[in-house]
Length: 230
Image (cartoon, rainbow, N blue to C red; front, side, top):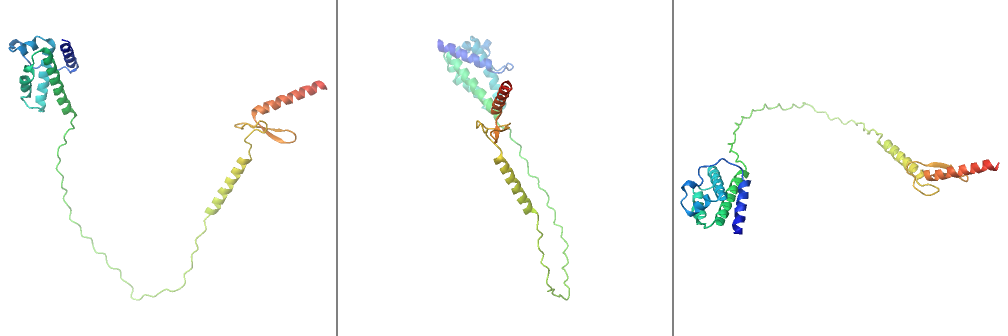
C-alpha cells in the first residue's frame, strides 16, 4: 500500500512539472473502457491525467519523426495492459513519460544542420602578355677609371657624450642619497617624512619629531630656570 501511494505521488509530481498542452483526442476514452486496466485508469484521477499527458507527448514525438509510428500501441499492449494493479500502472506511465520527454529534449539540443552550398567556380582570366623590355645598349668604348677615390670617414655622433652625462648624474644622485640622514642621531629611529637639525655639543645632529619635542621641552626648562635664578 505504501509503495502504491509513493508511486502515485511521484507520478502526480511529474505531471504537475510538465508544461501545459492542449488536450488531445488520442487518449483513453473512459466512456468506452472495456478491459480491467482501462477501468482502473478511468477510476483513478492521477492515472487518467497521466494517460492524457502521455497521449500528448506521443503525438509530439510522432510529429517530430523520432520514433516508430506504432511504438505507442506496442507499449500499450506489452507494458500497460500487462499490469495488474495501480502501482504497476503508475510506474509504467512514469517511465514512459520520462522516456518521451528525453527524446524530445534530445531533439531540441541537436545543432541545426547547415545546408550544403555548392562551391562557386570563378572563371579564370587569360594572362595578359607583357611587352618585352628592350635590352640596354652598351657604349662602343669603355674607359676604366683608375683614379684614387677619397676615403669617407664616418661622422662622430654625440651619443657617447650623452651616455657619460647620464652616468655622472646617476653617481651624483646615489651620492646624495647615501649622504642624507636616514636615522635619528639621538634615538636611532628611522626618519620618514620630517627631520630637525640641532647643534648639540658643537656637533650637528639630525633628530626625529619625537626627539625634537624632547629637546624643545628641555630648552624651555633651562630657560625657565635661568630666568628665576637671575
